Image 1 (cartoon, rainbow, N blue to C red):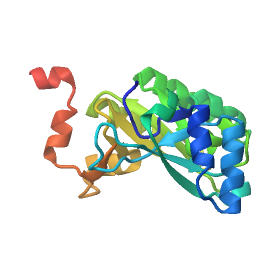
Image 2 (image 1 turned 180 degrees about the horizontal axis):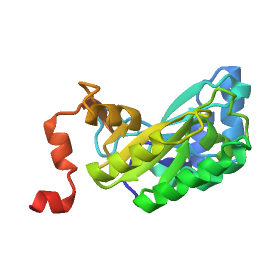
Image 3 (image 1 turned 120 degrees about the vertical axis):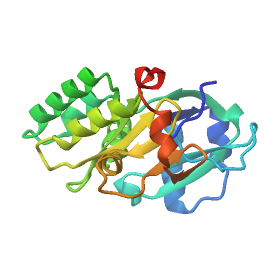
Image 4 (image 1 turned 90 degrees about the vertical axis):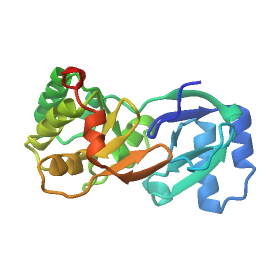
Length: 227
């Protein structure tokens, strides 16, 4: 089984869905759960309890669309209920949901990220609308990007290109995710690196903490570490 990671999608077995549907839900939540089960839509891996054992149930989330008041439903399922993992849609897939004006800028940003060697995925409202075909995106919705980075230098380059995205609407939000699974909000990373912020929140599968000086050292480019 692939390792757990925040923002990784999880697809459940028929038995897994049957067990979730058998739980006590209010009418609105049940309607949403029934739709997810009937269409075999994915759930998303969320933060796991810090004390979770290896065989502990997996914490998953279901952020409901507008028709179910954008409720955030949480479930815990045994590992045996997971059939496979998947990923959120790729960066280019979101172009069709954007207003006409920023599409060219969006594609230019995609080329810049590709030049950096940084794969980007779209989660949040845009990602879930692409996955489900249900209405999530509102006029004020941000575009949330999950961007994999190797080291601090690559993270700096990605943040630079994100900051340079000319259209201010929709706003780009999201996280830079290092290879060890630690993640930081790209805006907070940029401010921290520039000395405009004293603290940087680092998110992990089992919790979150403030970064210290060793965080950048651990994510320094390989050549720099060898020097």
